[in-house]
Length: 70
Image (cartoon, rainbow, N blue to C red; front, side, top):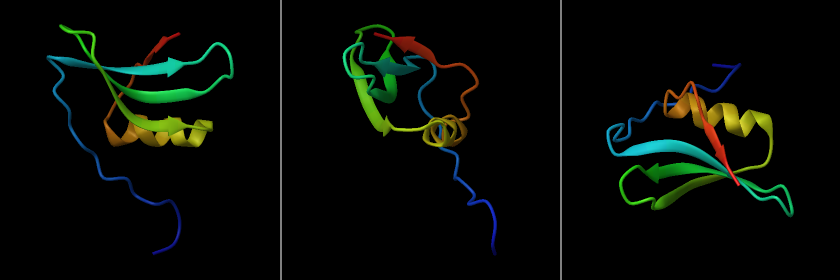
């Protein structure tokens, strides 16, 4: 009942989309989402304000590696 909140895992199309962390050089803002491998389209998922939000995103989609783009 008490303790760490359990995050429900969600799957994504791993053949066409890859997880990406878009980082702003100017203000340091980070946005987690998915980039289409074929078209380059970026689909924003959530704003990352701290390391726990990043870990929650990775856990939600069962992601081990997350590339950064600037």
